[in-house]
Length: 239
Image (cartoon, rainbow, N blue to C red; front, side, top):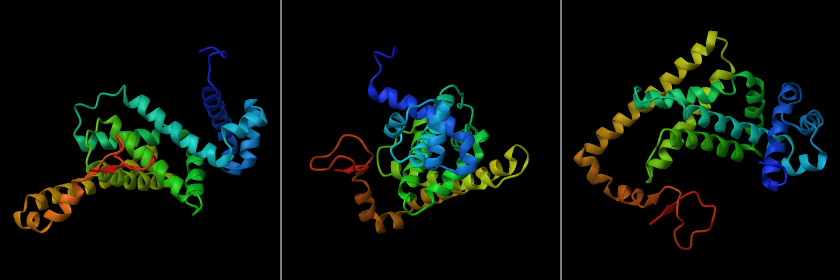
Protein backbone atom coordinates (compact mmCIF):
# COMPACT_ATOMS: atom_id res chain seq x y z
CA UNK A 1 0.00 0.00 0.00
CA UNK A 2 1.48 3.35 -1.04
CA UNK A 3 1.64 6.36 1.25
CA UNK A 4 -0.91 8.10 -0.97
CA UNK A 5 -3.52 5.36 -0.54
CA UNK A 6 -3.09 4.85 3.20
CA UNK A 7 -5.92 6.11 5.35
CA UNK A 8 -5.32 8.21 8.44
CA UNK A 9 -6.24 5.16 10.53
CA UNK A 10 -3.59 3.07 8.77
CA UNK A 11 -0.95 5.73 9.39
CA UNK A 12 -1.85 5.99 13.06
CA UNK A 13 -1.80 2.20 13.43
CA UNK A 14 1.68 2.11 11.92
CA UNK A 15 2.86 4.94 14.16
CA UNK A 16 1.41 3.22 17.24
CA UNK A 17 3.14 -0.06 16.35
CA UNK A 18 6.45 1.76 15.84
CA UNK A 19 6.02 3.51 19.18
CA UNK A 20 5.37 0.23 20.99
CA UNK A 21 8.47 -1.42 19.51
CA UNK A 22 10.61 1.61 20.34
CA UNK A 23 9.13 1.79 23.87
CA UNK A 24 10.09 -1.75 24.91
CA UNK A 25 13.74 -0.97 25.87
CA UNK A 26 12.53 1.94 28.01
CA UNK A 27 9.63 0.21 29.76
CA UNK A 28 11.90 -1.79 32.06
CA UNK A 29 13.21 1.45 33.56
CA UNK A 30 10.31 3.90 33.29
CA UNK A 31 7.23 1.66 32.95
CA UNK A 32 4.39 2.44 30.57
CA UNK A 33 4.60 6.18 31.22
CA UNK A 34 4.69 9.43 29.29
CA UNK A 35 8.46 9.46 29.77
CA UNK A 36 8.61 6.17 27.89
CA UNK A 37 6.25 7.55 25.28
CA UNK A 38 8.46 10.59 24.71
CA UNK A 39 11.61 8.47 24.44
CA UNK A 40 9.87 6.04 22.07
CA UNK A 41 8.71 8.86 19.79
CA UNK A 42 12.26 10.18 19.58
CA UNK A 43 13.74 6.73 18.91
CA UNK A 44 11.11 5.81 16.31
CA UNK A 45 11.24 9.18 14.59
CA UNK A 46 7.54 9.77 15.13
CA UNK A 47 6.56 13.42 15.33
CA UNK A 48 5.10 14.50 18.68
CA UNK A 49 1.76 15.52 17.16
CA UNK A 50 1.41 12.13 15.42
CA UNK A 51 2.42 10.32 18.60
CA UNK A 52 -0.23 12.26 20.53
CA UNK A 53 -2.88 11.16 18.02
CA UNK A 54 -1.70 7.54 18.00
CA UNK A 55 -1.57 7.30 21.80
CA UNK A 56 -3.51 10.18 23.41
CA UNK A 57 -3.05 8.75 26.93
CA UNK A 58 0.63 8.15 26.43
CA UNK A 59 2.01 5.01 28.01
CA UNK A 60 -1.42 3.58 28.86
CA UNK A 61 -2.36 3.45 25.19
CA UNK A 62 1.00 1.94 24.31
CA UNK A 63 0.56 -0.75 26.99
CA UNK A 64 -2.89 -1.61 25.63
CA UNK A 65 -1.52 -1.67 22.07
CA UNK A 66 1.32 -3.96 23.17
CA UNK A 67 -1.21 -6.38 24.64
CA UNK A 68 -3.36 -6.38 21.49
CA UNK A 69 -0.27 -6.88 19.34
CA UNK A 70 0.44 -10.01 21.38
CA UNK A 71 -3.08 -11.25 20.64
CA UNK A 72 -2.57 -10.59 16.93
CA UNK A 73 0.74 -12.49 16.89
CA UNK A 74 -0.88 -15.41 18.69
CA UNK A 75 -3.75 -15.51 16.18
CA UNK A 76 -1.33 -15.41 13.25
CA UNK A 77 0.81 -18.25 14.57
CA UNK A 78 -2.18 -20.31 15.69
CA UNK A 79 -3.55 -20.25 12.13
CA UNK A 80 -0.47 -22.18 10.97
CA UNK A 81 -0.66 -24.81 13.72
CA UNK A 82 -2.15 -28.28 13.37
CA UNK A 83 -4.06 -28.95 16.57
CA UNK A 84 -6.34 -31.71 15.29
CA UNK A 85 -4.44 -34.50 17.03
CA UNK A 86 -4.84 -32.84 20.43
CA UNK A 87 -7.74 -33.15 22.84
CA UNK A 88 -9.79 -29.99 23.16
CA UNK A 89 -8.38 -29.16 26.60
CA UNK A 90 -4.86 -29.58 25.18
CA UNK A 91 -5.69 -27.19 22.34
CA UNK A 92 -6.79 -24.55 24.81
CA UNK A 93 -3.64 -25.04 26.88
CA UNK A 94 -1.47 -24.87 23.75
CA UNK A 95 -2.88 -21.50 22.70
CA UNK A 96 -2.61 -20.06 26.21
CA UNK A 97 1.02 -21.15 26.19
CA UNK A 98 1.50 -19.68 22.71
CA UNK A 99 0.00 -16.35 23.81
CA UNK A 100 2.56 -16.13 26.62
CA UNK A 101 5.42 -17.32 24.42
CA UNK A 102 4.90 -14.61 21.78
CA UNK A 103 5.81 -11.99 24.41
CA UNK A 104 8.35 -14.16 26.21
CA UNK A 105 11.25 -11.88 25.32
CA UNK A 106 9.43 -8.87 26.76
CA UNK A 107 8.62 -10.21 30.21
CA UNK A 108 9.40 -6.91 31.92
CA UNK A 109 7.00 -5.09 29.60
CA UNK A 110 4.30 -7.61 30.55
CA UNK A 111 5.13 -7.17 34.23
CA UNK A 112 4.88 -3.40 33.97
CA UNK A 113 1.61 -3.72 32.08
CA UNK A 114 0.17 -6.03 34.74
CA UNK A 115 1.13 -3.47 37.38
CA UNK A 116 -0.40 -0.62 35.40
CA UNK A 117 -3.70 -2.39 34.75
CA UNK A 118 -4.00 -3.54 38.35
CA UNK A 119 -4.50 0.09 39.39
CA UNK A 120 -8.16 0.91 40.12
CA UNK A 121 -8.26 3.65 37.48
CA UNK A 122 -7.10 1.23 34.77
CA UNK A 123 -8.56 -2.01 36.14
CA UNK A 124 -11.64 -2.10 33.88
CA UNK A 125 -9.49 -1.67 30.79
CA UNK A 126 -7.16 -4.41 31.99
CA UNK A 127 -10.14 -6.72 32.39
CA UNK A 128 -11.30 -5.90 28.86
CA UNK A 129 -7.85 -6.70 27.48
CA UNK A 130 -7.78 -10.08 29.23
CA UNK A 131 -11.30 -10.80 28.00
CA UNK A 132 -10.15 -9.89 24.48
CA UNK A 133 -7.32 -12.41 24.75
CA UNK A 134 -9.70 -15.16 25.92
CA UNK A 135 -12.05 -14.27 23.06
CA UNK A 136 -9.18 -14.43 20.56
CA UNK A 137 -8.17 -17.87 21.81
CA UNK A 138 -11.68 -19.29 21.60
CA UNK A 139 -12.19 -17.80 18.15
CA UNK A 140 -8.87 -19.28 16.99
CA UNK A 141 -10.16 -22.66 18.19
CA UNK A 142 -13.36 -22.24 16.18
CA UNK A 143 -15.72 -21.82 19.12
CA UNK A 144 -19.26 -21.84 17.75
CA UNK A 145 -21.23 -21.20 20.96
CA UNK A 146 -23.77 -18.40 20.65
CA UNK A 147 -25.64 -18.75 23.96
CA UNK A 148 -24.59 -18.05 27.55
CA UNK A 149 -21.74 -20.53 27.12
CA UNK A 150 -20.06 -17.88 24.96
CA UNK A 151 -19.67 -15.80 28.12
CA UNK A 152 -18.83 -18.56 30.57
CA UNK A 153 -16.07 -19.95 28.33
CA UNK A 154 -14.42 -16.55 28.05
CA UNK A 155 -14.86 -15.74 31.73
CA UNK A 156 -13.28 -19.01 32.83
CA UNK A 157 -10.43 -18.75 30.33
CA UNK A 158 -9.79 -15.14 31.39
CA UNK A 159 -9.14 -16.44 34.90
CA UNK A 160 -6.92 -19.25 33.67
CA UNK A 161 -4.90 -16.97 31.40
CA UNK A 162 -4.42 -14.14 33.89
CA UNK A 163 -3.40 -16.48 36.74
CA UNK A 164 -0.94 -18.28 34.44
CA UNK A 165 0.63 -14.99 33.34
CA UNK A 166 1.11 -13.93 36.96
CA UNK A 167 2.71 -17.31 37.75
CA UNK A 168 4.95 -16.98 34.68
CA UNK A 169 6.15 -13.53 35.75
CA UNK A 170 7.69 -15.04 38.87
CA UNK A 171 8.78 -18.34 37.36
CA UNK A 172 12.52 -19.03 37.34
CA UNK A 173 12.33 -22.67 36.22
CA UNK A 174 14.14 -23.80 33.03
CA UNK A 175 12.03 -23.15 29.92
CA UNK A 176 9.22 -22.01 32.24
CA UNK A 177 8.42 -25.66 32.97
CA UNK A 178 6.74 -24.79 36.26
CA UNK A 179 4.42 -22.35 34.47
CA UNK A 180 3.26 -24.92 31.95
CA UNK A 181 2.67 -27.44 34.75
CA UNK A 182 0.63 -24.77 36.54
CA UNK A 183 -1.36 -24.15 33.35
CA UNK A 184 -2.09 -27.86 32.96
CA UNK A 185 -3.41 -27.97 36.53
CA UNK A 186 -5.68 -24.99 35.91
CA UNK A 187 -7.05 -26.57 32.72
CA UNK A 188 -7.63 -29.83 34.60
CA UNK A 189 -9.56 -27.89 37.28
CA UNK A 190 -11.78 -26.46 34.55
CA UNK A 191 -12.35 -29.88 32.99
CA UNK A 192 -13.37 -31.31 36.38
CA UNK A 193 -15.82 -28.44 36.77
CA UNK A 194 -17.27 -29.14 33.30
CA UNK A 195 -17.68 -32.84 34.13
CA UNK A 196 -19.47 -31.96 37.35
CA UNK A 197 -21.70 -29.50 35.50
CA UNK A 198 -22.58 -32.17 32.92
CA UNK A 199 -23.56 -34.65 35.65
CA UNK A 200 -25.64 -31.98 37.35
CA UNK A 201 -27.38 -31.18 34.07
CA UNK A 202 -28.27 -34.85 33.56
CA UNK A 203 -29.78 -35.11 37.06
CA UNK A 204 -33.57 -35.03 36.71
CA UNK A 205 -34.17 -33.50 40.15
CA UNK A 206 -31.63 -30.74 39.54
CA UNK A 207 -33.16 -30.15 36.11
CA UNK A 208 -36.59 -29.61 37.66
CA UNK A 209 -35.25 -27.29 40.39
CA UNK A 210 -33.35 -25.11 37.96
CA UNK A 211 -35.79 -25.10 35.07
CA UNK A 212 -36.54 -21.41 35.67
CA UNK A 213 -32.94 -20.15 35.76
CA UNK A 214 -32.14 -22.35 32.76
CA UNK A 215 -34.97 -20.74 30.81
CA UNK A 216 -33.61 -17.29 31.64
CA UNK A 217 -30.10 -18.33 30.58
CA UNK A 218 -31.59 -19.54 27.32
CA UNK A 219 -32.49 -15.96 26.46
CA UNK A 220 -28.87 -14.81 26.60
CA UNK A 221 -27.10 -14.58 23.27
CA UNK A 222 -23.52 -13.87 22.26
CA UNK A 223 -22.65 -10.50 20.72
CA UNK A 224 -23.95 -10.19 17.19
CA UNK A 225 -26.87 -8.52 15.54
CA UNK A 226 -28.35 -5.97 17.92
CA UNK A 227 -31.78 -6.59 19.28
CA UNK A 228 -34.29 -3.72 18.93
CA UNK A 229 -33.90 -0.88 21.45
CA UNK A 230 -30.49 -2.14 22.66
CA UNK A 231 -27.89 0.66 22.60
CA UNK A 232 -24.70 0.16 20.59
CA UNK A 233 -21.81 -1.07 22.72
CA UNK A 234 -23.66 -3.59 24.86
CA UNK A 235 -21.73 -6.90 25.00
CA UNK A 236 -24.58 -9.19 24.07
CA UNK A 237 -28.30 -9.43 23.66
CA UNK A 238 -31.32 -11.44 24.73
CA UNK A 239 -34.45 -12.49 22.92
